[in-house]
Image (cartoon, rainbow, N blue to C red; front, side, top):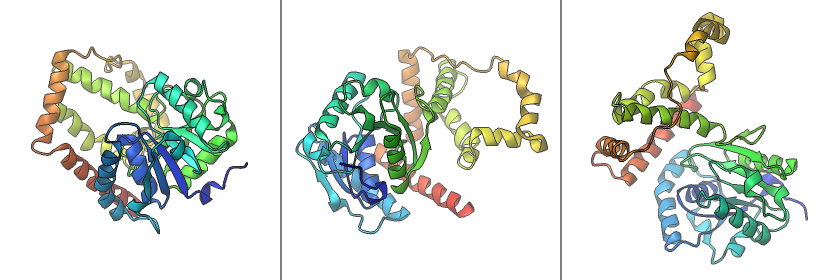
Length: 314
């Protein structure tokens, strides 16, 4: 059996339907795929359908693929059903290594022999997750960003036993499915974007813990500052411009010595009860009377506006 053309795939499986898995299901449905989803959790189907209902207005505004419909979702009664007769499987189970290993082993046993299996893991390497898979050569990481139905980035990388053609197939499939694909050169703990996010996150926690800045100040320092530039150019090209006509070379030559200044506290602070409470209180203050559902709707609406503006400016 040979793999289908990734551009000809019409039916995908989604295993694990929490925030990330449910977001993947919404994305695939909006792109016109038939989706077979499975999650053993109590009430999982109702939660998934509510998530898709909540995401659908944003997806309609972005533009649905021809034939896209929420009715093309099937919630399977078993893992085997979700893994049979599908061209691709996206696993989004809980972030526990032992569970990932067991789940990928079970998916591998249930899926058609040539079906590519991708994990949404945000931290584990495929080498450690594919340990017990009989056909590990078709397992890859497809690391998305929340919400997967709007944020286009997906980082793709295989493990030591993954075949290069499986990574090629996954990249082509994701690209055809409307994602912006980074094919990573090697396994990297935390991947690329998470490593960058975590650096900022650790600094934010240190500043709150030391009473140097509030949650609101930290968030606005990004949304009203670098975040605006990062939506258009990444940190490297942004600093390239900071060097003026001399570009990155001048920037590094001029500011290079400051790289060793004691600005950063990249080691994570101790998560004390006091720090936890201050973070929670700060977020609740920022949210005000807006519920999580309200914030999700606001985030989606504003993300769409940014994506449309960026597309118009390109």
